[in-house]
Amino acid sequence: MKIIRLSRIVCFMVFSFCVDEVLAQRERDEFPTLKNFKGLQFKSSDSTIYMNFRFRMQNRLGASTIDGDNLGIREFDARVRRLRMRVDGYLYSPKFSYTIQLAFTRGDQDFDDTGVANIVRDAVVFYNFTPNFYIAFGLNKLPGNRQRVNSSGQLQFADRSIVNAAMNIDRDFGIKAYYKNKIGETAVYHLKGAITTGEGRVANNTDKGLAYTGRAELLPLGAFTDDGDYSEGDLMRERTPKVSFGGGYSKNVGTTRSGGQIGYYLYEPVTLQTYFADAIFKYNGWAYQFEYIKRTVDKAITYNEAGESAYAFNGQGINQQISYLFKSNYELAGRYSWLEPGASIGDYQQETEVIELGATKYLHQHRIKFQLNVNYQTKQGVFALDGKGNRWGGVFQVELGI
Image (cartoon, rainbow, N blue to C red; front, top):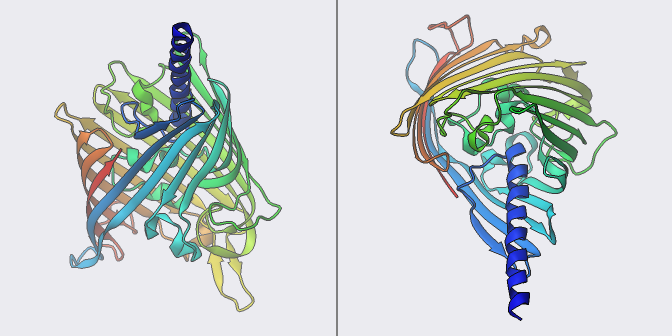
C-alpha cells in the first residue's frame, strides 16, 4: 500500500509540473502573466480537472478640455473601465486546456458600436502537441500588433495608443496555430497564424468571407525575463539587453464592420488589409517600444439607399513609448503617437498626434498599481498649440487584480 501511495504522489507531482508548464507556455503567447500570480486554484483529487480563477478591475477618474485657447473642462470620465473574470484550466489532460474571460462593464463589451452587450471576450480551447507547438479553436485575440496582443492589465499607460485604437484587429473566432523555437544557443523565434471568420466577437452568423492573419517574431538576444516582451515597462530590470522584433499581416475579406472585427457597421462589405511592424527593448529598468501599422481598404466609403455614408478607416500610424523604472518601483514614461488617415477619408478624419506623460507606482508589479497620465492631442499640424479641436487630458487609474 505504501508503494502504491508513493507512486500516486510522484505521479501527481509530475502531472502538476506538466500542467504549470503547458499553461505558462500558452499564456506567454496569448495573455502573458507573471509567474508569481496564479489566482485561486482548484484541482480535483484525481487530477483530471484543474481550474484557475482570476479577476481584475480598473477604476479611473479623468477629464479633458477642447480647443487650445479654452481650458474649460469638456468632459469627465469617472467609471469602472474594466471588470473582468477569467478562468483557465484543463480537462482530463494538461494538453487539452481552455480559457474563458468575461467582461462586465459597458466600455468593455463593444456595446456602443453594436448595440449588443458582448460579455464574452474569450472562449477558446487549446491543444498542445509539444511544449513548442499548440493550436487554439474558439474566440480569442488574433496574433496582430504587439500592443493589442499585450493584455490591458500589462500596460504602463491607462489606455493603448490612438494608432492601436484605429487599426488593431482584436479578437475573432476561428483556428490559430503557435510555434516557437531557438536559433543557435540564444536567439528565439515565434511563428503565429490564424484563419478566422472576420466577424469579431458580436457575430451571430457568418458570411463567406474569412480573415487570414500571420505574425513572426525574432528575439536575437534571447527570451525576456518572465516573458517581458509582452509586458510594458522593464519591471524585471533585465540584467542584459533584450530586444524583440515583430511583424505581420492580416486580410479580412468581405467584412461589414469599419474595423474588420470591430467598429460600427458599414452599408456594404469591404476588404481590409492591415500591416504591422513593432519592436521592444529592455535593459536595467529602461524600456522602449515602437509600433507601425498601415491599413488599406478596397472601398473606404459605403452608402445606403438614402445616400447616408459610413466609412472604414484606412491610413497609417506610429506609436513610440520610452520609460524608466526606479528601484523604488516608481516609473516615468513618455509616449508619442501619430495617426494619418488616407486621402479617401479626409472629410471624416484628421491627422492626429498625441503626446503623453505617465507616472506609475507598482505595488505588486502590474497586478496592483496606481497610474497618473497627462496628454495633449492635436489635430492640426505638428505639436500645434492653438488649433481647433486640440485638447488636454488627464486620467488617474487604480488597477487591482489577482
